[in-house]
Length: 221
Image (tube, rainbow, N blue to C red; front, side, top):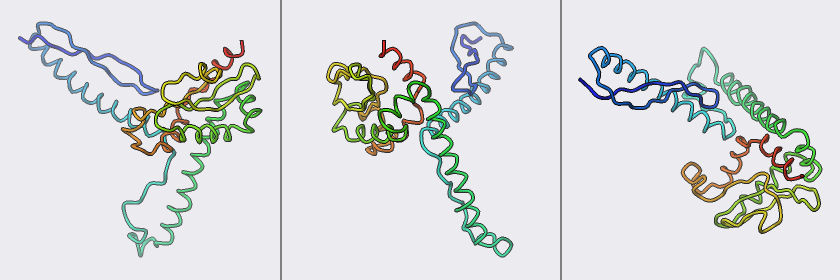
């Protein structure tokens, strides 16, 4: 007799199904033990699937890059020339990758739509210019702190600024926070080490623009 079993439940993670397990105490018969062993195998398979999903989400924070070939361009000669291989890899394949990055950037802009996008264009010239300005300000923070996109209620305009350490945006500048980028080292060091610009560049891929838009609506009231 055994006093432990695992129960599997469905769950959801960014569009991908995975499983979670939890332990309950029970007295198991032989048939229950067999069932449990089957479920353990299922849990292991689902854990592997979950790990893959997490890796995919993490990878989505960076731009796509052209993968290296595992062989030389001339490895298929004389059947396929090195010139053809180089052309298809460095030109055609590279173009597809670049176009994918451009499309995803346009998608980010589309998410920041409506009144928020109008305000960004009015106060910064374009969505891209706002991103560039906020990125520069955020990367330039000395030590720890935050980069901010805030709303100036007096002028009715958006502004980009930075705050050191734990200084509150509204308390020190009067701006109402709409979007903040955390540049304390614990926010990125394990993945990006001391390359803060790469972290700031990647963070734009996971901004919740719907939430930023809602914050702007609230700030205007």
